[in-house]
Length: 105
Image (cartoon, rainbow, N blue to C red; front, side, top):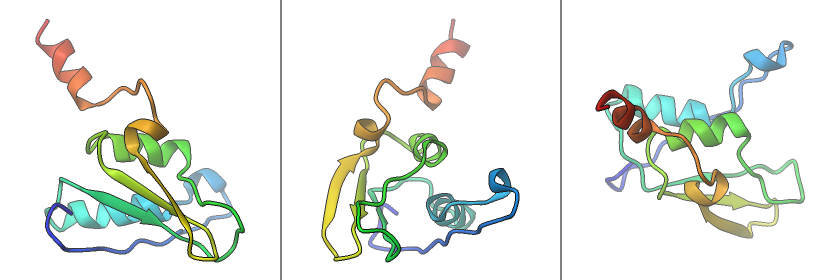
């Protein structure tokens, strides 16, 4: 959130993979349901992999809906992390501003 608040999300798996929800989207949806619509950063963590945990394409687009310049901290199980912005993870993206530009023409 823009304030110093923080929120949590979890991965909700389903036998029908496309019906599952990633932790990033549950955390953002929870924050939005509580009235937050502007974000500074998100941290993604897991103890299941020995590589940086990166958001999937659907989560990248979902994050993009709330801006392209916020930080994404991707961690490894050893606690190290890699920092990228939403823009770096989803370059040349399509977002809400593109829809507004289309409405004005």
